[in-house]
Length: 257
Image 1 (spheres, rainbow, N blue to C red):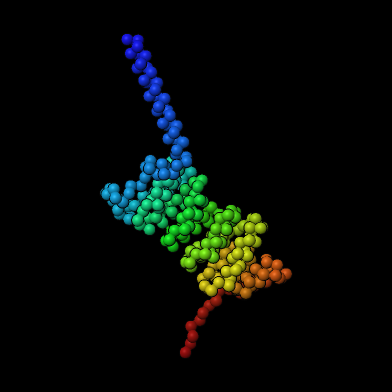
Image 2: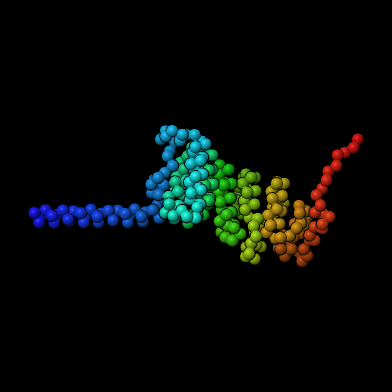
């Protein structure tokens, strides 16, 4: 009788020990394996045929809800990691480019340690709109401070074949910079775009330069070129900023015949 009781007690101890070990292994995986995280409670796949799942409206709402939940300050870090992993799984597997972009936009709102690395990978996506979303997310991380992201955005401006993607990167670089060396680096990089053949690129460049420098040269490209020459050491004089008369809006009167 005592032998049976001892065996029973030993069995209970072994079961409890096994459960503790499984819990420890599982919890350690959660913080390192994003694939494991995604599979804990993934967004159902299209092939699962769950009612409403294939509806773009319902799926979009589900993705957005996960992004909103992950962005909340009171959301536990463990849950936030799972939500981010689910959205990354959606981006990686969805056949619908609109849902993939929704997933990227949702991920952009969630604080996550590896978000920068993931967004840099998404920046290589073939879809123009997805690349724009990745740029906007990287712009939030950059915030006028991180030089490595600034370098990536500058590289995207000069290598991307799409005008709108380039413009998105120019806009994200148009932020106040406290580091004087980084300020000069980005200012000179953007300054080269003042000679770009695309009018919209030149326009957005002047907008961003205005935000970075605090100078008011409006859309007078010649003044901006002179400003860049001064920053680059080619000139000792800064161009004059606009007068109040120049700032007055232009009124186009109808031609009388």
